[in-house]
Length: 66
Image (cartoon, rainbow, N blue to C red; front, top):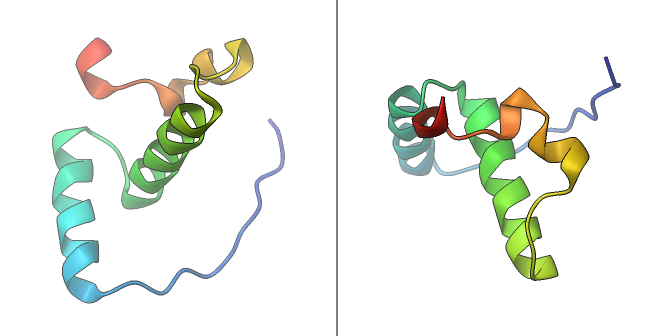
């Protein structure tokens, strides 16, 4: 398993509630949902899809594709 970087994130409580509900719908933790959304945003910014390594990572798959 690769090491993971930890950091503190301060967000509005209402935003956290929305992320929590969305994560439940996608069968993810809030942390997993935030990481998924960030990976998607980075991939869009790069103008492509996630790398093969990231696509193989189960944390990056949509719950709908399982």
